[in-house]
Length: 223
Length: 248
Image 1: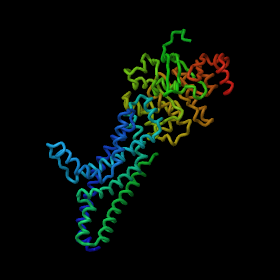
Image 2 (image 1 turned 180 degrees about the vertical axis):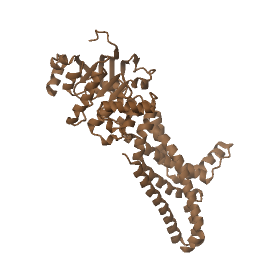
Image 3 (image 1 turned 90 degrees about the vertical axis):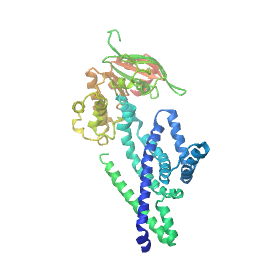
Image 4 (image 1 turned 90 degrees about the horizontal axis):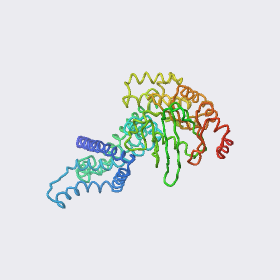
């Protein structure tokens, strides 16, 4: 155990850094995607509702590992060979970010849609009755209330996404699990290696969920 | 009733409203003149709340026209947000903005819609709060107020937009009996100030005292309308008599 830490410690920490980078990039774009499709799910427009629902259903209905292979191998193949004339290639980081953003984005869209719909319709009606536009009412009245109810679910989703980065080891991104595989192969110490990796995830996720609790408490002030 | 050529604020013609196959409003025709206080009464499910909500387009009508201050709000070309700035509405369940304190509840719309500066809006908000007897609650949140206080704030919030018309949708139905009086008092003061008001209510005593005209609705129709003494004391229609016997 000590040997792994002294020899491979910095390597594993670097891998953890890349895991966090991938998770953050994925989450950032997932928030944007989730916001867009979440709002499309609640607006009074049938076409928007249907598009949002299809997006969510498709992404939720496909395992992330399939999505990862599809984005990393399938999409370049489509452009370069099937259509032809392109030379598209994605790095593992780009493909990984796209996968996480799509996957997490779909779940975020559902969280956002449900959060908005959980706010009493009377709030929107009262805002509109004063002459505020739909957009103003959403921004100033409905969303601030919706976000409060969404935060615990958001944090849960963040944690799931952080853990899902491990799936992206299959497309060769050198995140923590992928790196640990190499360590195991070099040292043959599988128990120690995976115990260390497990503890590393545990520490990061515990820190994340604890600080989330603090944030949640702060936001509830004055409620 | 309209003989003294008063300015007509709201004119409703052949208004119909259906939800799918359910026809809620069947053929409503009426007018409200400036400064008039109209109380709408009737059994639940008679369409009176739906009628009120059509007047500021919270419900889109199926057919017919509603002309408010010369604008046909059923027409797509009319900017409904502009018309709504002139029509205050008070809801059964108050609908104060839970994420904002009382002062911000009152200033949100005037400031967002650039009716005045933030400072002016706050000054007027404090005036309106004093008017409803809640000047000391400016910094409170809605969850800290009683039902009667919330409803008075809701009235003050609507008044901050300086509307010409106020709509009340069963403003006292969700209140404890002891809080009904304070809300009705604010409404009486408002009526005395000459506000044009349309009030859906079950408070017959209030209707008799304050209303210039009472409309009795049932089954999506206006069955009878007239002065409180005509409709409430000497009703002509069978169904009005029936209803009044049950509630009085």
